[in-house]
Length: 315
Image (cartoon, rainbow, N blue to C red; front, side):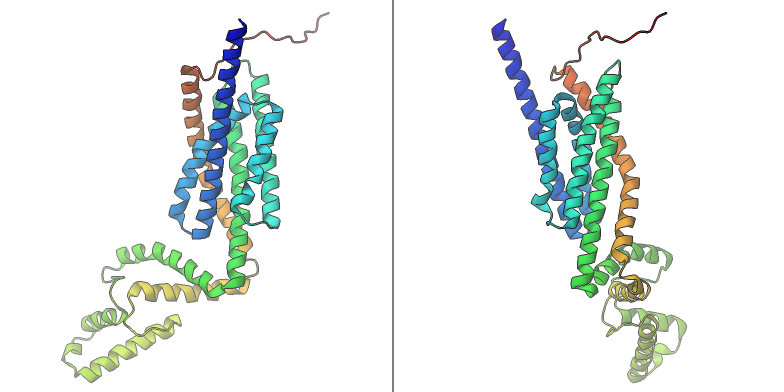
């Protein structure tokens, strides 16, 4: 009997270690990937951290189920302070760590509430509560870092910030323009685009002397450049000309409000991610149900039935 108890205790310890290691490894990968995604300013780099968060949430729910309060408190402290490994120390970092600590600790108490107040073990409810709390905290942390990154960009190199923003907008606009304007080819040069337009609208253009053709091309080029208030020699592809035009328009519209731009940017990112967070939570719940089912099937988890005492009022 004593030997069986030792084996059972050793098996339980190994399982707890596995859960703890999985929790830490996933979390540190998430922080590293979020840090990279914010620095690289590219939507494609958010795919991997999103997938990691979906995988992580049910594991966090599992940890909140199997760990005691003291152990989970240590985990909460470690996971929260792990933020400093990948992000700079500033006022936003202090706020982020405080939010993470609150989020993880609240996760534990919400999970324990579910365990002690439900007659049947309900992994869907537990994963839902954990996902809702952690996703909200993560979105706030990301919004803080986006605010800090944009503020730093504007302070160090405002021109580079507008160039990057114009590049992102151009990538979204060009496919739409090419579909709407069949004669628009973003790869051809500005002068080639002008020549094709003159050939269509001025029948005698090709019969003109070379000097007159060059004069008409230069005149059309200058008219376009003045209209968009940009500089170009004519050999630049239309994609680059479009990007310069968009950059100029963005400066015209946004620069007067540059003082509040980081805040607006952070709020916009938070609002967008909040919408996407709904799908992250949904996928995490589905993955969580499967994970808990698999753990029960493999005897990693056991759900037992116990009797509880409750107060009953009689006359």
